[in-house]
Image 1 (cartoon, rainbow, N blue to C red):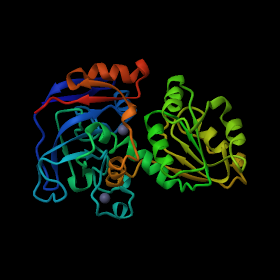
Image 2 (image 1 turned 90 degrees about the horizontal axis):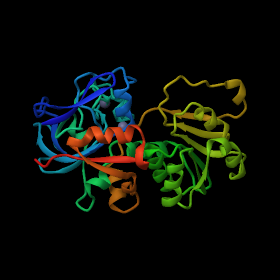
Image 3 (image 1 turned 90 degrees about the vertical axis):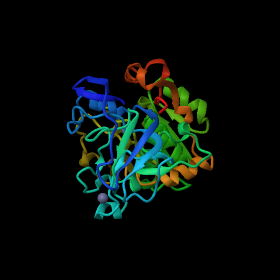
Amino acid sequence: MKALTYIEHGKFALLDKPKPEILDPRDAVVRVTLGSICTSDLHIKHGSVPRAVPGITVGHEMVGVVESVGSAVTAVQPGDRVTVNVETFCGECFFCKHGFVNNCTDPNGGWALGCRIDGGQAEFVRVPYADQGLNKIPDSVTDEQALFVGDVLATGFWAARISEITVDDTVLIIGAGPTGICTLLCVMLRKPKRIIVCEKDPARIAFVREHYPEVLVCEPENCKEFTLANSDHNGADVVLEVAGAKDTFRLAWECARPNAIVTVVALYDEAQALPLPDMYGKNLIFKTGGVDGCDCAEILALIEAGKIDTTPLITHRYRLEDIEEAYHLFENRLDGVIKVAITMPKA
Ligand SMILES: [Zn+2]
Ligand SMILES: [Zn+2]
């Protein structure tokens, strides 16, 4: 089968590899039907994910059809259409039992697919702990509708869930990239009084204005002023920092009202300062980290009910054989790209 492979720093290549096999009774092999490219794939390519293993197949956003299952798998069977979770988790350790699946203590717990073990920018993928890692896609939900459930949409859903948003809140979301927009969609489900999105890219601003006209939009330069002017208590009640740019962490806590929750979803290239003397008396609550991707069934039900629609994010479509072209477009943010969908060859 064809599989996009991490060769070395700066280089991916589409190679011929053997089809994956079941290695553990809890594994499933999935025939990938549709995949995508995530910014984290670019991080691997550029060498900023040291734990990424050269030679692995990259890709961790995909949907497909179960091809085979190990003897201990009970939740899915061959022929089921499924979403694949970016995170591998056992479901049994202390962290999994508390819903903190990102911290699963299994050696492959957390983000392993397409990083430490072979991922899904390929015709087939082996998924460990298939009972946890796969969710059946309802018949009325298309592959494109379900494509982001296991990664960026799971991240947005988790971020909105932990941010304790109420209907009286002014919520500020910093960053309107793919994860920022998924976060926006999940924040909207909680019906806060106001949502402000801060973004600097004109194409992304236009996207938000076109698709979500009820949302207020500002730019980093006037974000603090704008948020103060458009909130009831001298700042946002909840801030979600999804941008991860040089100054956006500072912007996040500066725009928060006293006693606000600041949720940091972003992954930074550099360490960030927490200048406690400057924020003394603001009594902020910071929540940080990587997605606990354990809400996929709930997210699929919301898609089925028409409450979440991420299909406008798919701006470009490619076939697996042209995936290097798709990377070029995505990496250089050409032609207003937000997300690409990669169609796999029919088995
Ligand atoms: Zn990702
Ligand atoms: Zn676990």
